[in-house]
Image (cartoon, rainbow, N blue to C red):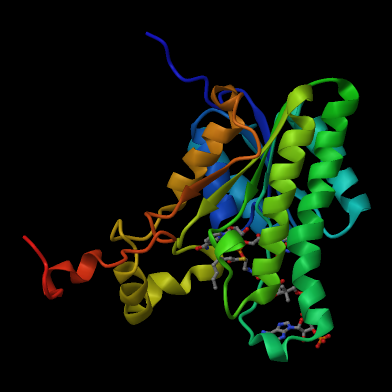
Length: 271
Ligand SMILES: CCCCC/C=C/C(=O)SCCNC(=O)CCNC(=O)[C@H](O)C(C)(C)COP(=O)(O)OP(=O)(O)OC[C@H]1O[C@@H](n2cnc3c(N)ncnc32)[C@H](O)[C@@H]1OP(=O)(O)O
Ligand SMILES: NC(=O)C1=CN([C@@H]2O[C@H](COP(=O)(O)OP(=O)(O)OC[C@H]3O[C@@H](n4cnc5c(N)ncnc54)[C@H](OP(=O)(O)O)[C@@H]3O)[C@@H](O)[C@H]2O)C=CC1
């Protein structure tokens, strides 16, 4: 029986790997057979993630490496260390991010820059470093950028992050087309709301949680592991003809329910 090739045996770097989605993603990729380097700025959380994966799946599956994605030299050092630890790097997941809710008219130039530097510049630095090595070596590889549907929908209250994610969307499509002929694939996932990391408040506030869920056609929040599995597909050779694409995983949230939820109340409705 034919099976999907998946990420079994692949070496993958996950940036922001100490965070909510990054840690869940790293663990799920390892369950699917990959070996991962989780990287970010905070050694302690990265160490905890690698240790938890080791306790579940055994040693040699997950490794912690510090990096500041805003700094190209730090990214190059991380890529060196990841290559030593994994043997070969086959995939990169650009998951690191930063944001704070703020009214656009109150956002300072430095506040805007602080988010752009992590999300847009950081994604570029990691992609240029890791994919640059693949291109110079004449080998392939897969990059998956973590977007959200607001990369194209917009997101009032977080203009810095929405602008950065919009930039990463353009980067995904551009580099996807530019490098496809040389075996380097660049794609993205666009997950909806998950009660982890930057939005872990969703797990605790029933009112906010209920209001959000009401707007999601699928009627529930997304599980981080579901994002991980979609990411695994894009990292795998099964997606070898998928280029510059965005896989949206939001239960239909960005499509909205439209008139459907009011259908029974509309005058003149023919049943
Ligand atoms: C809401 C929908 C979300 C759905 C999708 C979810 C996405 C995520 O969850 S993304 C990940 C969220 N996690 C984090 O953001 C954690 C990491 N965050 C940070 O490190 C900081 O929040 C950061 C993004 C601001 C970066 O920190 P740093 O570079 O150290 O920046 P500074 O603290 O030096 O501040 C720079 C600049 O920004 C202004 N600023 C910071 N926080 C706020 C705030 N809450 N409100 C307004 N302005 C803020 C700060 O004042 C500085 O500006 P100046 O004062 O002009 O110098
Ligand atoms: N949670 C959700 O509902 C959704 C999340 N997403 C996306 O998922 C991704 C992860 O978000 P989430 O897990 O919620 O958030 P977290 O805050 O938990 O994770 C963000 C991670 O980015 C790392 N990071 C921040 N700045 C830097 C930097 N300069 N260099 C290296 N690493 C950095 C942080 O680690 P450290 O501070 O230690 O460096 C942290 O581990 C983001 O791209 C986000 O936009 C998308 C849709 C929904």
